[in-house]
Length: 205
Image 1 (cartoon, rainbow, N blue to C red):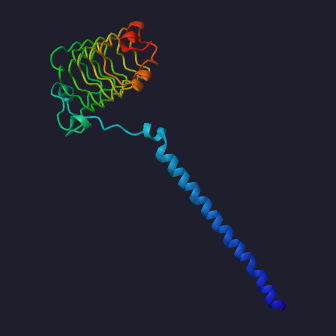
Image 2: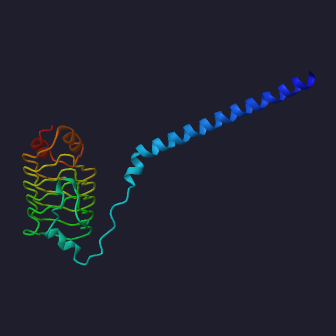
Image 3: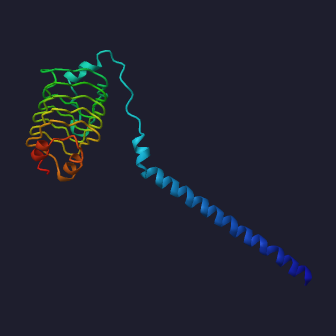
């Protein structure tokens, strides 16, 4: 009788220990699930995604004069269009109507260039310089213009929907008949460098 009671008393801690292990495992599993969820949704991780490797082609800058034509609407092409650090200052002929869809244009120079009717959907133009660039009738949707110099640009009848202009310089830019949706307009007009006249042209006061 005493042995039976003693055996029973020894079995109780094992049951409690098993329950304790189960709770620990469940806690660890929930913690891992939470970490995975945060990592998947985290904008910081998304922001740290790497860009395509830079092209080593000696004539890579000249490819802008040809552009890309494969899957333009979705930014899909046969090879990356790498125009990083290229200089097209005052280029008046070879960029008109070209497709630079999803091109890497970071830190490139297009000052004074004629880019009328060009297509730059989904291009990455952070830190690029477009001072006095003519974008008449161009399609510039979903372009990242963060920290770009866009002073005096002509955005007449230009599509700007989905594009971002964080810390971009937009002094004296012309927005006559610009095509942009209301939400993107609200974001664009938080840029304090836009002139009073530019805000009137955008219909934002």
